[in-house]
Image 1 (cartoon, rainbow, N blue to C red):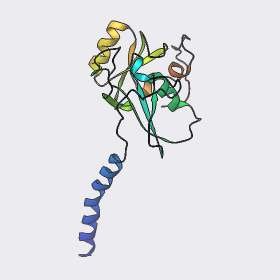
Image 2: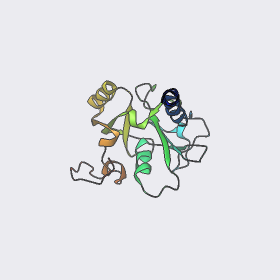
Image 3: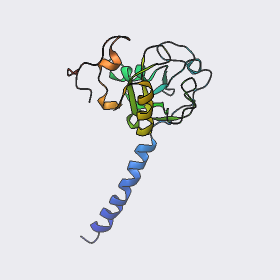
Image 4: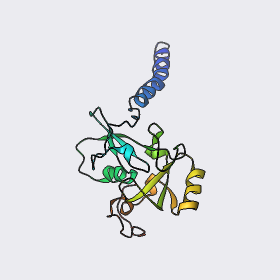
Amino acid sequence: MKRLLPLALVALLALPACREETAAALPEPVALTTSSVGHFCQMNLLEHPGPKAQVHLEDVSAPLFFSQVRDAVAYQRMPEQSHAIIATYVSDMSRAPGWDDPGAENWIPATDAFYVVGSRLSGGMGAPELVPFSAEADAAAFAAGNGGRVLRLDEISDAEVLAPAGSDTRSTADDGDYA
């Protein structure tokens, strides 16, 4: 029994190191450059206003970039992907220079953001946009000036990202089990 106690202690001390290794395995966000193009539109992202997103896939070295955050969230919710999604980052509009310049390196994990849904501003491709902020107060201030409501990612309905642009997405009906 005396021999098992030191072994158990060593095993317990090793567990946090395993957790750190797993967390470190997530890819870091990639800065936008002049060669960064949208996954769906194949257009240069730096030429379009509004927040952007990047989705990192398992066993794929480069992320998929999206011209609009709404498009990345729609991509996540569609069942047709060929690879597992391991990380999604969105522009942090709390730190963005402005709507026309959302920033090239100010990324936050999509699950950490506060989103303004239903604002009067359109995203980079002219469709309704989900506007991400790291600070809830910044999201609330944006919504106060531009309309919309502040939600977390898991509160955004499928209809708000999968419905065609311009359709009424304010349905209160249950639209699936995404959450």
